[in-house]
Image (tube, rainbow, N blue to C red; front, side):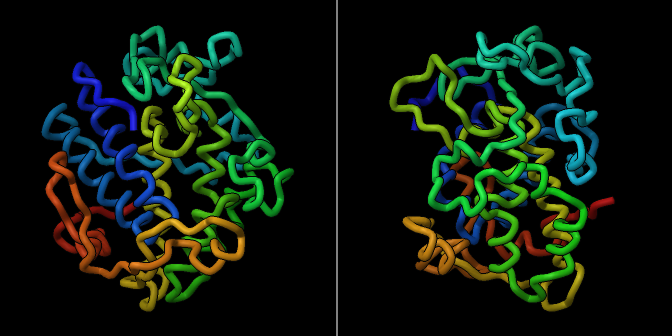
Length: 295
């Protein structure tokens, strides 16, 4: 954990919250429900603190599977509303310069050290994986993980099998990782070059890039569609609270966490930033605690 930056913004607090929870909400059964709960609370914060009156947008990266680099998501340089494009220079670590979140707009992130967001497209991100022993096909292009047929197969398959769905989706070469790693830079969790030597790359830094929220809204959409596909899916939930990927055999046994195992009444802790909740609160997107559907 980096030291708390007392001059940071509320947005930085959201990033720090993700950093603080990183080991508990990835490769454990909290992955889907915790990120859904986080998206809900971030939307409430936008409305209450920023007078935002719209829904949470999602990035349908399935539509970009054939040309990820050319996605329209990276083609809006507007300094007020644009997401900005790709970084182009290795000399500045592929810092994004345009859009509302680029260097030219003075959008500076506090963690792990003050820096502007970076994006560096990589179609073959698995070749430099931090866990090479867990990558069955390192030469596979990342966009293969987000094709329409693959996502459709996930939604239609794994009937009543929450663990199986998560294993496929959050696997080291699944859609979740693929999008993070192909965008590179902050979304891939790479440390800035001016960070302390002890800074470790990892998903914890990913919310620095605002694309994080739209990526995870799409993940939530896929989970929601899977839930609605079969009655057995709707409240299906199982998995552990401790990451287990010491080797491939252990990870295949516990793809979404080992014991202690979680249950629907397990807590979602806001650590003072958000009100606490429970997993069961977010299992139904129209159940009262949540009230939304995806178009």
